[in-house]
Image (cartoon, rainbow, N blue to C red):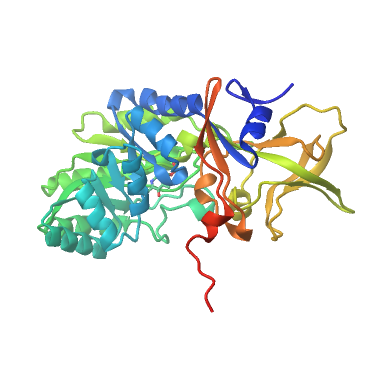
Length: 406
Ligand SMILES: *Cc1c(COP(=O)(O)O)cnc(C)c1O
């Protein structure tokens, strides 16, 4: 028995493209996108894929072909969306620290709106729009102050958080925006965190946002869209799978009879389950207290375990007739935190292939060159066909912008 991505055995991918290798299933991307459009079909939402989860151009192009918009958090991500043939008019610019140059780039590209996170940002957008003679569509990111009950590093909707405008300041912020001549208020937005498996905080946030929409309407501030953000979790380990359909039904009930268009910004739930990190075992090291399976992928390739103590399932590609043992799966990087999994039961030996599952989101997009390791290649599998969508980096590329002066 051997593991496959769609119709292709992982062993063949390793032979052809080398390891470590990110492998994505195109069918899984399509299905994840379809799950959103189907669940929310009554509302015909604009689904804006959050590029930071995985910004590979082929993945962006695939989502664009399915009708997706995009949620971006930097000028670089906008450049990616445009390079992939994405529609700027379906692109939303989020993030707390947009620079003047990024705002100008986005205005000229014609983004759907800026999700604005502070009053000084409103001033900055007003100034840039005035300078280049444009009107800027804005939506305010309101912090609904609900506890997303997720990891503190990926919880964003609480008062004590750097993101968004405080709920109690929201009306004043909208009044302020309404007084700025170069801004056009088009929406409201919230995003309370990531990897949410209990969806009640999301419906609670929606409820609170809709109360604000009504208050704004009373003041004559009408909105074109309501953006409920992203954050739907996926199953990595023993979480319960969040019920997208139940969430969609609650949102549909709350949104019924309203004139605004629904916008969603999912990232992880569109790509997370579609990707794996394929890696080869370099050594099996029997320790006095612990065993280690040392593989050729590391924290620079997949940072989530080191950063969030995140769990990723790890499986041997070939079923081997070896006695299973318990080991930490670690990379070659010189850090104790460099592990992909701890205390895993595995049956493998040097030269074997392992897959690190559910690595499509916040995997390659968070990769670095730490220890001067080349970033992994990426492959997109469609049925029996595998396309290289990112070549393996080279040392020359890593050093290209440096000089050895003195
Ligand atoms: C990261 C992010 C998302 C996507 O979050 P997921 O948990 O990956 O769905 C959406 N909107 C904003 C503003 C974000 O920062």
